[in-house]
Length: 95
Image 1 (cartoon, one colour):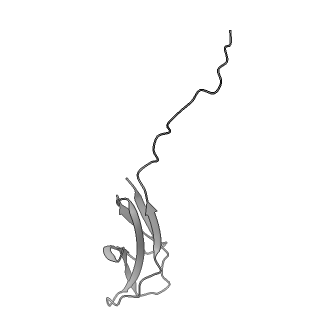
Image 2: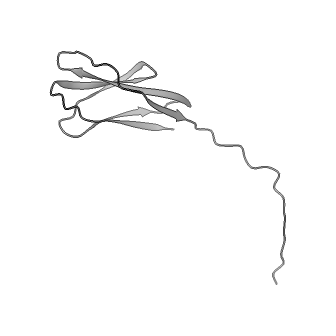
Image 3: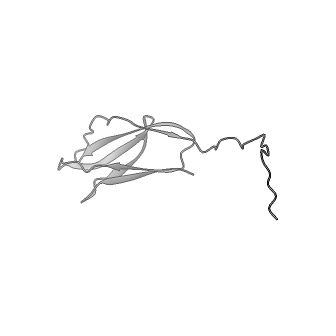
């Protein structure tokens, strides 16, 4: 299971109330503007694949900013195939 946590730097704008987070253009959820520090939003258990994560800022009067540049992520839960065709290339006897 993958857990992605996106950190959104605190906006210097005083009227930012929350951030909207989008996964491949679809709203995934909101996170409030913290009183101090940066906002963090977890994307839990996404499936394998490519993701474009974007964020908008929403003001107290519900005006929304344009979307951020996308943060691109590629997730792959599947490991490589097991090694095959092992061969013994040397053997040494130690008494």
